[in-house]
Amino acid sequence: MSKQGKVNSTWWVAALVERFQFDHEDLSNPKRRCRAFTNTIILQAEDRNHAYTKAIEYGKLGKDENSDWSDEKGRKGKWVFEGLASLTRMIDQEIDPDGTEICFEDDIGISVGRVKSWIRSKEELEAFNGDE
Image (cartoon, rainbow, N blue to C red):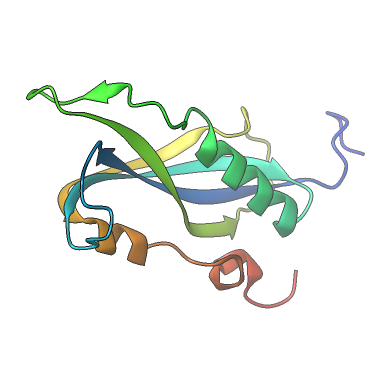
């Protein structure tokens, strides 16, 4: 155990992808335009599976089915969590607090299909390439 009482934990960097979806848009059209955020956070986890689970949980925070956002034209919509674009292990050092956003990207007018193309399966993430 370390001084803080954490068992064999290390720091990870995760890139979370979310996009804005207006109510009543054509969900079958992956070429429709949207606004997308890539939020890069750090988190502490015991291993890559724990890091993956925590990153997904952070991505889902605050996302629900309610349409509580609107644009300047009064169109309502919601933020949709798409998934992870990246998950990598950091060098071992003390950083706090867990889940702190360390980088942010804002893409306006890009297609939903493009946003979805950023998402990788668990096995494709850097943390899962090779041995632990």
